[in-house]
Image (tube, rainbow, N blue to C red):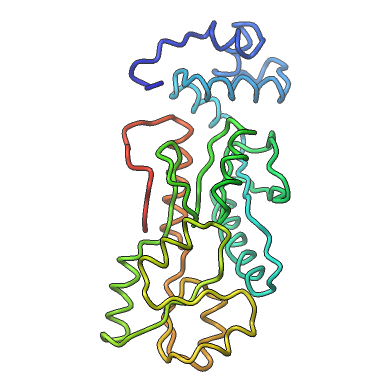
Length: 269
């Protein structure tokens, strides 16, 4: 339902949430002088989000909390190398959000489940099937980071292959290079990379590094860059930067507000 045509009323919210109209009003206006359980408050906000009621007021209620809580969902790898890479990315983003007075939690990746502790879920390099199962369990915003969902309902943020190729061509002065990346369970991401980079090498284990004979290496992962940098000419263009984190935060805010002013949800940086 579009923001511009929504006719949902506060009574509709109260009915769907199973609470009184007064309770909905208290939540929207962030009343602190009345005792409303966190469970009730969160249920009302979820219904507001689902029915797209008065996004500005809903955002105000969300903003009234002392801290926003963001959950990270990712597939833990058995590879020590990729596990180190995942940890590095999560630490970077956790610190980024901490500086903006937000809290972060990590979800169990074994089974998609309902998340009542967070205001949004950031899915980092997960299979699209898992993303949708997680979405079926939750009504809070889901954002796809470094993975492809290819659904206009959700924001997906990935590295821009044209920028990578442009900077690599300049750095290597037109010489050939090999793009090295960790393997991914997101099939759409793997196919996307294969289409955009003719010389591509996926790794998961350290032993595979000995198979690389090319001199020039492009990668978006600091762990790969550190290891291959000892014997190769490496260009590191990190997949997670402050600029990308800024875009991630902006997308979360747009998803909160159900802002339809930006029709393009497939974003590259």
